[in-house]
Image (cartoon, rainbow, N blue to C red; front, side, top):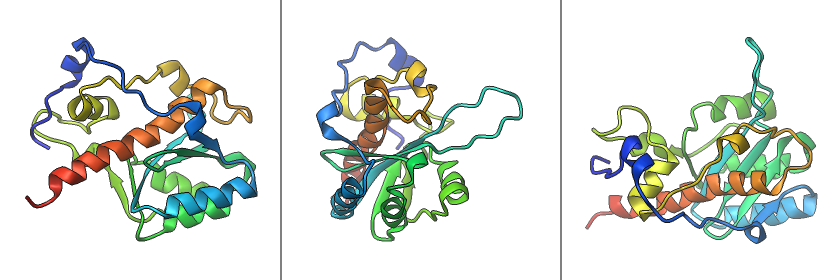
Length: 202
């Protein structure tokens, strides 16, 4: 996309309204087989879903990541968060992420493929990294969600660094973690819808 109107520098200085995102009532923490079945049905019903994952950060030199600890998937209305450590939702998660006809869209997915395969034996299929697809002359690196939201919606996508580097392996995620994780997946799908519209023949 060569016409991105917000660079990282201009985004930081811009006075933009906040992207509303999903609320807690729109988020499902998939921690039972019943919820896994419901999530499976909802996520496979569409043509595309938002996708992201979170891992407990590593701080020591040479320390290997044991992530991902949470996988986030979103429809146009809801987000489904799959805690990896509990294992209850692994079969549903594997079915969704390996579904060849379902597009999984997200930002910065470079490490997700190898991490999911190594930890869960999941082979990702039909993945679209928006960070790569939205690159243009104004962006030497990949485009992040914040820049994409500013460009497509004229809004600011708030991401707390403190929450982003919190303990995603914790069995009890707090409300700020739930909102952060859910909206990472949700915003990717919302951006994809507009990007795909722009790619359609006129």
